[in-house]
Image (cartoon, rainbow over all chains, first blue to last red; front, side, top):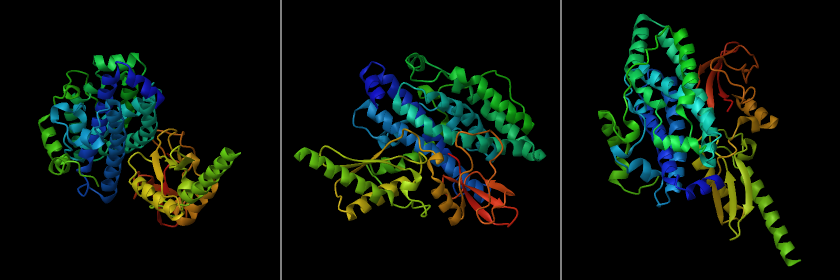
Length: 261
Length: 170
């Protein structure tokens, strides 16, 4: 807390608020998407598994929103930040908001994201912001399981039947253009990296690619070439489905403002 | 001397409150208390006479935390502590390494395989050797990484054919 207090007093306060909010949005939106599987997954074990991963992400989001709210210091709380902001105010990356598609698409979305987040959290554990570092220390353990779960399924699907292989490769090709955004660093991130608060995403690229190569080799899947990447999520420009997601996610707070469990 | 007496009273009260709170059982794994789990971190007397209780979440999204908070308040109220504030502390991050040998034995006796090995030992693939809590065989296999709660995985014993919960390394 002391480090946060010091930082909050400097001109980086606005940056830190936005950064914590982006991380919170990533976690909340992916948690919401995964939650859509609840009661619909292909097997009971996977139904429970995806709901558990969703719960991890929602837990991370709660801690990050609460931290963001404290940095902002305007009396907003986690619920208001998650449920009462509009589409353009969300800074999550486009990858996490992509529709669930079939099971392969959900699994590949998770693998692309978690293989990035695992080394991300590990580095964030050394953040000058003590609260971010503490959240990272917990999230890192959870991400380990998310990578393993999605990697095992990617291999099973890719190296499975003709149909499962084709669907897994299709999922890769659909989602690949959304992975470039994970490595974007705008001025805000650069300032926080210089202050030892944020993680430079570029520094994670090699580990991310190494994880994917290992999994894809075993899964007999092909990693697409670098090429063109979609962008916009960090600055509030989202895909069409995002509004629909928010409509469902925010319904309770919109209909009954200030409601609590 | 007066001040010293007050300090001693506060110290005794905190110690008693810690013991009371430590006995609160985990709502999902009732053979373990929050003392066994290491969820209860600290109990101290605040300047305004409010008892400050620090707990740490096992998993960030663990729904049991809300129940823990309520149960701690109830247990402390029954013991005469009616002004209680429960704080969630995130650092240091909870780990299964904090489970005592006694706690691990309680889990095994309850039918849940305790975490095998250290939380720091991780690989992308491959699992720890998990012994069946019923027949102790190591001929076991993972059914699913995620079980009935965030902290458990589903396993099966090939020797006695029983399915069982495994408390994951974390």
